Length: 630
Image (cartoon, rainbow, N blue to C red; front, side, top):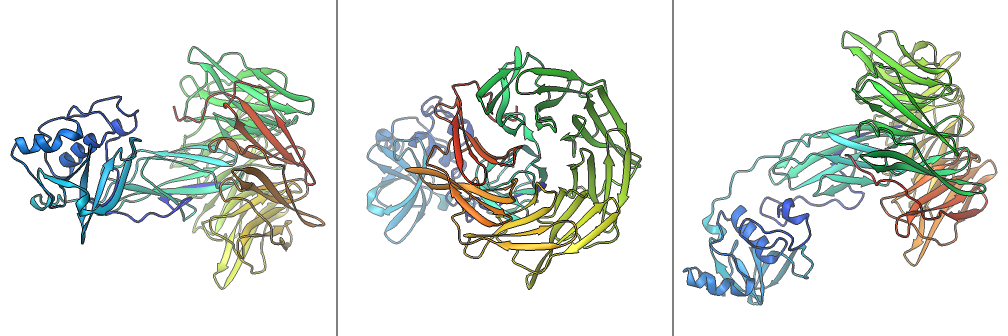
């Protein structure tokens, strides 16, 4: 599935009220804030992240006053008096609060209190705000804000393009800063994830093979920017720290070596134990255009654009050895909507080609006999925010999208040799949020939420060999907006699973291509929201997550079997690095939770086969580079 990033950060965490330009916010420049304390000097000759440096910055940026000296906080009072500035016990907005060996900036004055902003109050070089009695300080009046007219302010511009590192159960977003922004709100599928002051977000509340629409907006006291948006399909893993399902077991793969010897490394948990192997040095490829694939034959491939950008280089690891293949010079299509896909013939890169007057598609596939590339006949690319590439169950690929008035789906299918195309009748395709493109036993499907709040329904439209069919589910609960997913089940059906009620039950509706059925779980512990994932298993859909607490770090999976729901805990173990852990649907129908642990050079994988858990720790390995946009 894919996701549109509308970075209106709804909170993975909490929604933060937006301050005005003069309200509490850490606007200390990043060039001093993001380096070690006392490692550089500021523009006034004071060490970074000290209280004096922050106050000097505030006086300059808010009061329009340039510091006439640089000195330790203990000397500020005497130095100010010597230059003729008033120092007394009367607070004022914009004054400097002078304590014992400490200075702060006065944000506001209350009834017997002052609210101050400061750095290094706890000797940690960090920003802080607090409200204290007026008598806690003396006050230096360099140029109080009562004497400074407030500058006009305008809403910030929209953040520049959103870059994405998509993995099965985590998505990393990064965007360019907007001048004048106080913070950013990031939303997924119309639901706020988080409000952040930086320009990067790790979303760990995603499940594999989903479609997500992200949006990011910049905010300040004057207003909110237009959103920057990005549609994300987390069907493949980005180049760094990828967790993959192989014929042998779960694997962790990444880039290794250095610029002079650009290698790859994969570590795989086989039934006989862990193995790790490096590839021969090669080109890592374009940072914005490289991906790991779990191939149909159980091997893994790392494919990327190289050279002038019109060739694909794929390195394949079969669990024992690496091979490499470079494509001829091909048209690889436009960057937007280009996708790396697993097919029955081998890894493929597919994209939109042509132009507005002749809207085409192209796929290039690495077969056992070599590379082939084929164009589709010109057709409609469809809505930019609502189109997806699918790896079909029969090993072909499809490009499906909404077209026309938005109530039809057009799917072009490539079987490795030729293209075919099929347009649906006029159907209800459901709401945009949570609409998903899925691979089923019958063919590609588009599914979504339908109805309204009073009659919450679902609808799936499937392209069968006999033509298109569309079916509604009986009305039911759509579930929590931030915690629901479509799954392509192992038996070729699809399920829509979500938390409902008090949040301790899962409701799954299943569509087999003809009819819908529904099943509600008992009251279960579904684990923490962060890293909770919906997964396809040999037994049926599952929801898995981290459980317990820091002292007893556990896992739990709840699975809908043909005999009903079961839930099982794993023995306590290490949850691993928060930024580097993933749930995997294994090739044998089990699920694994794999993560880096210890010093970061070991992988710990816990496996659940539907009945019991097992655990395996790798030796100390080179696991490759962490996630990076470079």
